[in-house]
Amino acid sequence: MRVVFFVIALFWASAAEARDLSALSWLAGCWRLTDQRGAFSEVWVTPGRPVFFGYGISHATAGRDDWRQVRIEPRGEDIVLFFMPGGRGPIFYTWSEMSVRGDGGRIRFDTEDRRFPQSIIYDRIGEQLTETVIDWRGVSEDFAFTRAECPAQP
Image 1 (cartoon, rainbow, N blue to C red):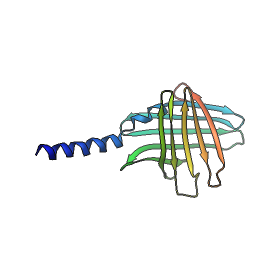
Image 2: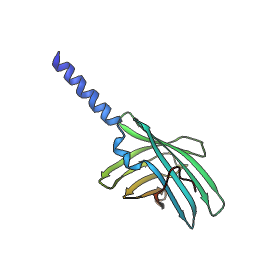
Image 3: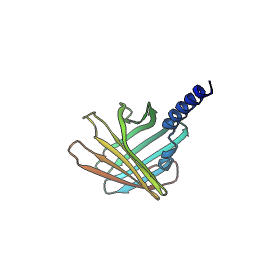
Image 4: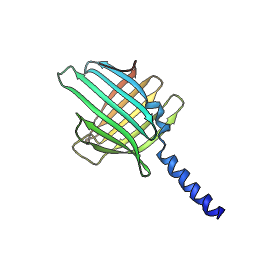
């Protein structure tokens, strides 16, 4: 009986660990970018496990303002990014790579939905968070955010 309980406890612990997003704590915070493309902000909050909520607001110099809602949560053994541009969607991205460093971390999400970017990568080093968006031709665009006061507003 003890062996059965121990095996069940091991399974339960590993399943709970798979759903624990605390390894992504480096993503939390308010981030801002202003460059020739416009003013951009992203906010990531962790209201509690096992989910991260985020939103982004863009005021492009080309006159195209945009916003998006984002959520990261466990789904089975995967970590899934729900990307909702303009509140539409969601588009599902599944993590394909993740690493944690003392000064930040990196996570990459990929989708099979060809109407949207193929990959979204978040990479934090110190006080800079870079979001890289890669389209289906392999062309990438980087957004190098710096930490900002919350709430970040462009």
